[in-house]
Length: 72
Image: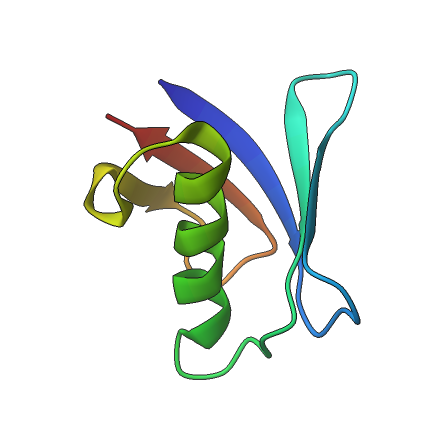
């Protein structure tokens, strides 16, 4: 399954919510430095969908706030 995600790093709270157009908005506490926000994103997505972190892959948008995530 592939999902579209919009990431907002450096947020006060870690939250995840689904928008009307099948895009997930994810607020992360980590800054977008040295891949910290991407690692936190993988953890949040894995927890939300009940899968292992190894099953979550960022397919595109590694350095962008808009990402495509693949969950296997």
